[in-house]
Length: 188
Image (cartoon, rainbow, N blue to C red):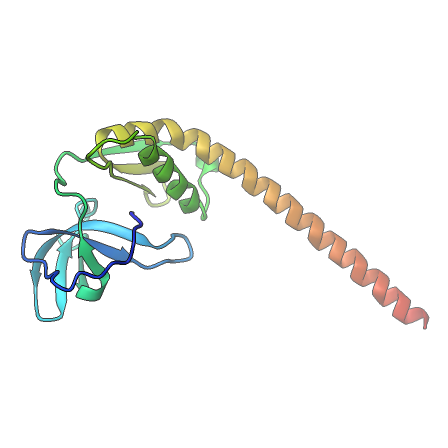
């Protein structure tokens, strides 16, 4: 996923074979962003796109239809040479909200590139319910991500445990306060 300014190019009309970025809307588990895709074709109002990081299960798995308003020119001219790595992690490190940790790892791994001309790409996601994480991107970004994933998930899990403990304490304090208020009302 990529973030960037919302500049509108009035002359932008991608043709078959062009690389574009399409807008990903935010979900409960993922923040908004942009993903790279190749244009397979288009009608007057919809563009048929294929995302290179998908397409494992069927021919249509990585294909989407997008209106022009949710497309922008790709800053990446070459999508070849992407590497795909599976990283096995301890099952107890993965949680339903690990995607926020994955976005942080993507930012760190790509942010460490040090002013190179060609931008690095990286996308990390959990593979089903299995204890493994899939990283797709340029080779250096994937290698950095492989090093960061276990430690970042471990720290994310520790932070989540602390957050849960704080919430549990707040709930207990609220219950105690309500009990004292009720006892005060009963005395009157």
